[in-house]
Amino acid sequence: MRHFDHVDPALRKHLFHRQPRAFDRHDDRAVLAVALGATLYSPAIRPTLAADVAKAARRGVTSMVLCLEDAISDEEVPAAEANLVAQLERVRAGGQEPPLLFVRVRAAEQIRDLAVRLGGAAELVTGFVLPKFTAQAGGEALEAVAEAADRTGHRLLAMPVIESHQAVYRETRSELLQDVARLLAKHRERVLAVRIGATDMSAAYGLRRPPDLSIYDIHPVAGAISEVVNILGRADGTGFVVTGPVWEYFSAGERMFKPQLRQSPFERQHAAPLRERLITSDLDGLIREVHLDKANGLIGKTVIHPSHVAAVHALSVVTHEEYCDASDILGEAGGGAMASVYANKMNEAKPHRAWAERLMLRARVFGVAAEGVTFVELLDAAGGR
Image 1: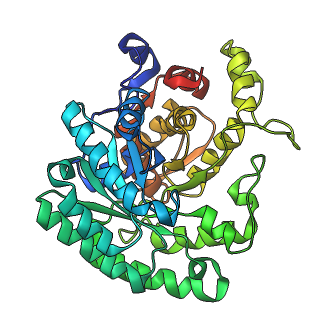
Image 2: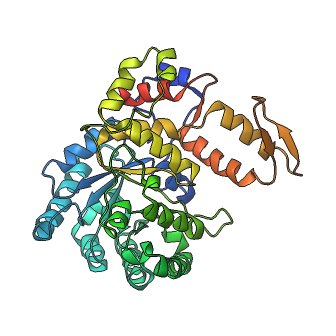
């Protein structure tokens, strides 16, 4: 699969200085972790799950989570498990390559059970999402993933979700996250990325983020996210890719604040109707939050509606200016500082090197925009209209 592969090839040629490169579930973990992009969650109980997976792939979705946990009620679990097995077999029989598929489970034993029940359809599963992850319970879950991989003969990866109350409360989160870091280090080859469960984090305080505020405006949760990045997202070789928290809105109610998208970029591209649709769907809030995710070291995002995917992916494309800066920085092995090619900033080879290396990995899977191509054009092409 390849990001923006659903876009007309002639248009794609116009949009990109460097085209996105293809990847599949067998790629290196570092590539897959960045390639996740907008990870679309879907309840495993849906009777049209196989058709949903195929439709999502056609719309540019490259990763999905089929949820057996919070997205379904306790009474639905047996039926959802049976449905998941049957629907994945339908996907397999269809013969089309699906997005990267992950199963969100409730317990370690569920992983072992599904490894048996899925049979040949296990080849479609890239891994498991491990909710409410702590060092105490996480070890068993990671061992279950390893056992399932041995049983099926396929590599299976894990994505732990940091969302427990202990991970939020100030007096317990530092110790918990350090314990988690030590556990994940022992299972590094099994861990794809660390996810953040902002909904559960907010629930610890009885909060819910409104659509016209970002999760970074909810200070108790923002503090927890900061510490997750600090301990689990370091660029010194000990960290992991940390993905952005869920955006859970897809239609607008009454707005309290002004829209968060400037008019001028859309007017220059004659895309004022696109801006209006984004605002009407509350996607201006999503776009702002993805910018803040990137600024805070998070890559990719959990989403709950296909309409969110284009915005996340358009914002994941490396700009021509960023690419020029990163190339210059990586070309200076001995350090030093230089003016940017765009003559608007100073690039320092040593302190900016880790940023440049991470950016080049994103450029590999999402591509580099052609000079002068804006986020608006990329969003329009990816499905914003």
